[in-house]
Length: 442
Image 1 (tube, rainbow, N blue to C red):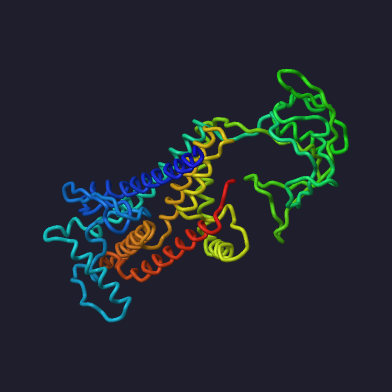
Image 2 (image 1 turned 120 degrees about the vertical axis):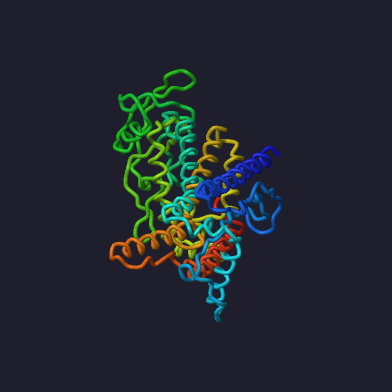
């Protein structure tokens, strides 16, 4: 029962954290818009049917049924088809009609005397500030969450206390987890090393860290090592001979490296079959921004490789393959992972809290990077439109030409329609995959 409650608590933490992140993202748009005089008619968290709302001044604030995002409604998002001109009559064709309807809807939001408060009337730099306000809030939240995680809790680092002792030696490419009768005994277990022992000395050298101790072990295959451990407050001396074996080569992030054929990259090292415990070690404040930068780079890489990653997700969801644990997940998958982390009885509470905060930090980085993609209806699409307008007007002034006026972003509505369809399909695929073949931390 406690495990179920902890699981639900973990899911709740992510749901509330994500809702808060979305709400603050929209506030990042709302505040500069109001400061610049734009009339904002709605501030909504979610999409679909309105659950409840309240009006304060000229703005309606509310929550909708589908908590998959949020928005603010500003009057005059699209300019007329021609500077100073009226909207054209409806054109024929599906996409032409879509463009015209966008212009008509935008025009209808502007009441008499409010034309100067339309969004498209803002100078380019003010429009960019309004649209970047949301991603900026996600960046600040990511920095805040990572600062709490890194400086308040710390990162998991190996200690010199032994957490596990293998009974036998399995090949690096073996998929078995249990020992067979013909598997060679692990040297550590054969020497009498036990979980809970703390390494004090290896081959006469003081064990200052796990990395230093295991480096000696890896380089001493076939050579007897005098090892001193502390057990129940007493010094215990054992002799163990590392076995020469192939072990996977780990990358920078600790994951096993694969070669061009998808096979494990291994190397021959000395092996005792012992593993460390870990503890959270607080990091300096200077570690926060580099961590945020690394996460931004990782998310950008995922987005750039998104088509292939989605193909992999589809093949795994509808076939026998396994999901890539580093691949994209939906909010359903994130909630599931959070629940599993919160219900891990063997993990200290501090580690679980730090992991949940780390998930919230990563979610805000994802919101930041994804919203900067230069396609409507994302924030980056509006920024791109404003920048293009600024470039056009700059060169018009430079060559003493007539002001070209606002960029007709309504013409991009077909692109917006396509992006919405793609995002909807992507979300449906990821949700389905997270239900039928979820990524798990267990």
